[in-house]
Length: 226
Image 1 (cartoon, helix red, strand yellow):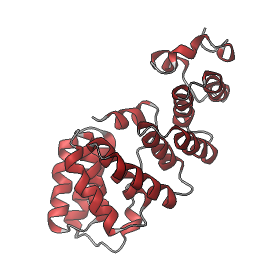
Image 2 (cartoon, helix red, strand yellow):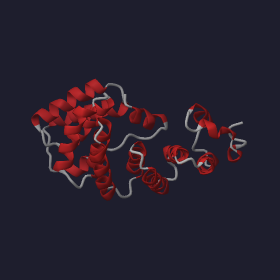
Image 3 (cartoon, helix red, strand yellow):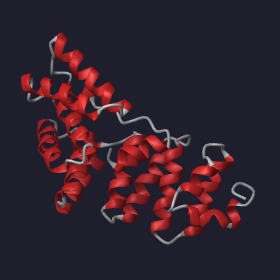
Image 4 (cartoon, one colour):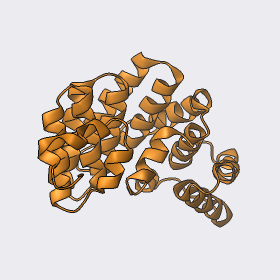
């Protein structure tokens, strides 16, 4: 399973919604609706990406312009480490609904993992214009910005995610990682201390994290990680 999928699961973050409301105009027959929901369940649980792929394939054979199904299959293919195959689905979903911020974000992810950093950055900018008060999606924006080397943007998106949901443990871990990439260990330790003070973070997870482990001797974290 791809690293981003594992990262979200590691920090107990609910996997992102698949934008069903954005494509209310698509009416699936009951049997295809069942296939879609079973595919989505398999994807969310991480139990079987192969099952998710097979089921969403059936939906798209009958309804090729189903945006939610296109987004789902793109993410399944990314989890299968097949970004070049995910890219056409992501691109088509964004074409069908150019105001769908999540579709644009998936396009950015697929393009980045396919090696097209120009498209990845363009899609990231477009996605940011359409993603407003959604902490989980801002965290994904931040992750992709960091992977593209856009550290200032990664910091901004992570700060927004934390402002939108101060209970999101993943936002504290991730913002600390961004600070470490920016060579700002004091700020990284401070944000982790805030999460620890609110009992949102697990000190053991910090020891296990190769990026954050060097902070374990920081004065700001004394009493939590000794």
